[in-house]
Length: 171
Image (cartoon, rainbow, N blue to C red; front, side, top):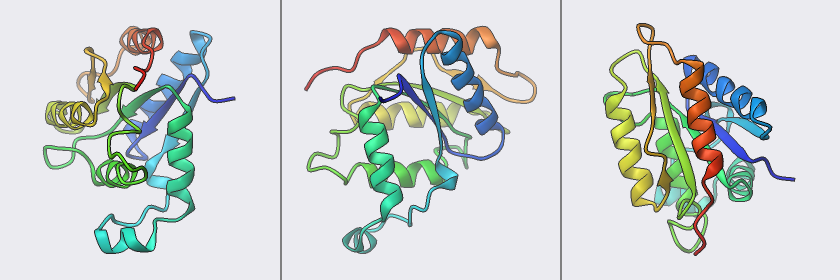
């Protein structure tokens, strides 16, 4: 049986810790959640040449897990004022797994969060633009945290609650 939501992390540091808190918040709301660490997957760098050779089983497993799960949370750090390479690469691969590049994302409720050593806002803006372009329903509230402004449990709980109330749009 698929989870109620998947929490993706695009780093194995502070954002992984943040992602675990989202999993715990879902459990506290009687929802099932699964954590996927993109840094642990063997996804080659996406290029058209590599695409022709195929990405391997990690991509197929990731696609199937995401396809079966109605809602996602993405926890990612800001890299050079934008989206980290592990997340950009995963999105590139996922967008070419079906005939329609938007099909996996289209209508899917997604919450976004960051623990960033820098500002973090550029990541949230860039990620919101990309996910919206892919057709996702990005939750209006987002979470920006850092060492000076740690994530609060009530903010995480509220984001999970909002996300669980959303249903994927039907094609």
